[in-house]
Length: 342
Image 1 (cartoon, one colour):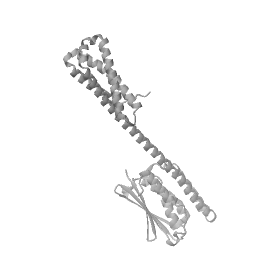
Image 2 (cartoon, helix red, strand yellow):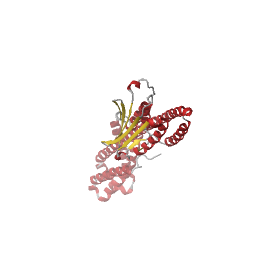
Image 3 (spheres, helix red, strand yellow):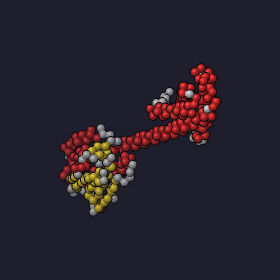
Image 4 (cartoon, one colour):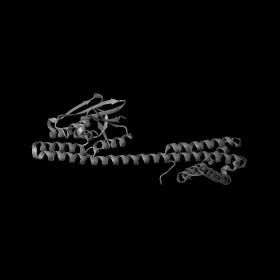
């Protein structure tokens, strides 16, 4: 069985403090009996007290009533005090080297009872508080671990949803190109293979630098540019101090995909997708904007998975609900995400 009391140096120091304190007050209280008798008496008393204190710590570790804890410790202290006094009296009667100190035993009995009872009470309450606080800390750590596992599971679930979602959309695009532009379809397959190989090894629970995230976005944009040719233009402007900022892996791809979907579908005009980043109050801010046709807005259908998945991931990762903001101004749709920098 794992030792619950003597396993840490803090507990050993605490026990030694009580023993030294008790030995000192006992030695001081019996100083009129002579140095040798007093020293032997104090030494034997401390040796008797040691296992009783350890036993008390075990009792409080394995059983602590939720109600009437104060009375429980008082009763336990009273019982152990009586046991201690009984053992000490027996030793005074049977140990030859303590014969001379027998005279002082009866004279100091009240002092022994009261002093030992106080020692047991103090030690008991300290142990009680120590174990209660330790249990609370362990419970808190367990809850944090459980919450983290739940978050990681939910984020992984989003990852498993994202990859098929993106893959199906890309396969539909390839299918549309096979008949009319087979060369572009083959090129898109190669690019898609490279991109999927890149994203399949990523851990959605981790973070990366904005620079690496933009590299993944550029790979994705190469795929879409094959499909939309010169109709898709991109403008990426990153402030130099944001390149090494931390950002959840592949958090931008669904947003860029959403911008292309609502910016390029249903139109034959050239469309420019803009990505802009900057730091604000120790937060990384990334803005993605695309033009859209208000008259066609209600005709477009979709699952809304892209933006909703980003919101969910940020909520799970940072415990905040204000990290995604959407605005529509003069036929321009803009989504802004804010990433705290720890």
